Image (cartoon, rainbow, N blue to C red; front, side):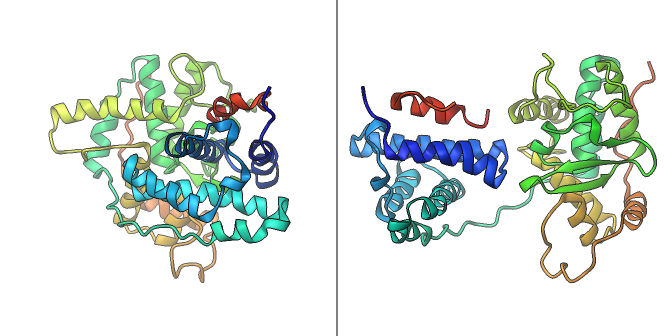
Length: 342
């Protein structure tokens, strides 16, 4: 029976204790980091003929990490962005190891000196106001599924939420009384209050009525689910978007961008607010960004100012709904890594 490797032991502490308990990172981050180590093991098997149960802490060196990153780009055709994401995961582990393996701190800090590769600034894709209103108008409101889809996509647009913020959103974070708003928890569990429009409230109430959710009750389960009443996934959210985007492309060729993702809704909301004259600082607060270059010298916008500015900038795009454990054996390491964050 193979003994658990030293790397496996420290990965256990990293994923089970350090990331969720000490750092409080999201499941999305844990999943991203675990994916990196899955690929790390694949690299050693394919390039060095070393199986997972033989990969040790000693194999994490600056040179091996650089070789790994080069392999990602040349052999797996990974983009510079993916390469940088993998590097960030390994750097996070090495930062953790500085305090776990102090006698070898120089080794861990050598990996930390590896710089991310510069990437081209990608053009932000967004829907025009006509494109967004046309897409939302494709959703039928005379069926339970249609009202669910409308609630999801209208919420995504009106709040400018990230996909994960929508997926984890709970009913207890809706305030239907004036000033109407929702509370979102973003990266690093950072809390922000986002004003919402009356039409979104109507849509959410119709959806909650279909699900039998009392708006006066405190619900801690995610508000938005899939067709089987299970947790909505990012892939499921993208599927809903693309289903209606396909309808628009058939009827109105050229109206929508070639690719649309959940984040496109967030870009679209920000763009529409700026086009309507909303101050960039207000947009910064609504989206939950840490900074917008030179804007940190200004005080945070108070809720009343933000509400008035948002009401003035509101563009009528949303339709109104119709009134009708840990591995036991080292050979299980890859499966354990793949299951993290699910």
